[in-house]
Image 1 (cartoon, rainbow, N blue to C red):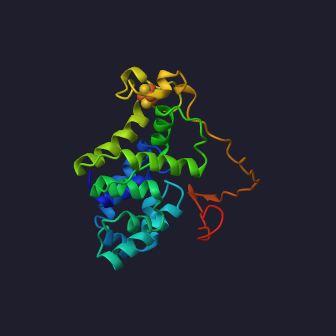
Image 2 (image 1 turned 120 degrees about the vertical axis):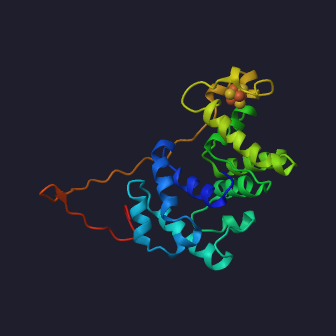
Image 3 (image 1 turned 45 degrees about the vertical axis):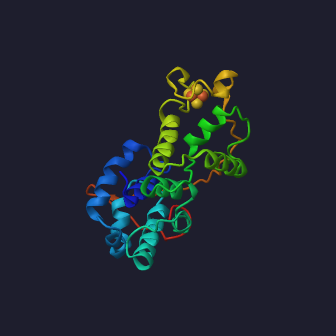
Amino acid sequence: NRDPYRIWISEIMLQQTRVEAVKPYFFRFFEHFPRISDLAAAPEEELLKCWEGLGYYSRARNIKKAAEILTEKYNGIFPESYGEILALPGIGSYTAGAIASIAFQLPVPAVDGNVLRVVMRLTDCRDDIADPKVKKAVRAQIQAVMPEAEADIRVFNQATMELGATVCAPNGPPRCLECPAMAFCKGRLRGTAEDLPVKGAKKPRRVEEKTVFLLVRDGKIALRKRPGTGLLA
Ligand code: SF4
């Protein structure tokens, strides 16, 4: 699908969320908000209701803010410029790259975790992918080899992501014998691919103890909405 609105919403929904979990939400979302201007005009409550169960509600709030900007400033359509897309709330370099390249065929990379892994294995690089500098360097490397023909740009980005999602996948050995890059992949040739990429330790999770009261009566549960900021907003 080359509609920037659909690419945008799918990418945001897929952050930290599995494809199978996203599917019903994705289709319901477009029944409610067929155009960006419908989203901008809808009360936030309606959007949050649609998002209920997907979690990370700040994503929905950012979508709403971005839809309002798109409607006010750009007549409800996406600007065809990477910089302007990147400036919208909740849209980082990966999502902006995906929208710009897939919808508008602009020659910009879209580096997600899958692409990072593929590049680290292809180049046999042991740099820490948790380091933002490394991600930036990978973006530059990909930028340098983006195809020139407009029609190939979206294919190139999607193919690289898909390679990382299906063949050079995480959690287990890469399926090098099925890989179109096997002849020139340094990680495969040197036997290092399986140990790549290197990822530095995450900050330890903060554990907080909470007491939760559940008020149940006649099969119904009383809920109180949390404030719009702070923990689990
Ligand atoms: Fe990944 Fe193997 Fe392909 Fe290299 S040859 S990109 S390690 S699947």
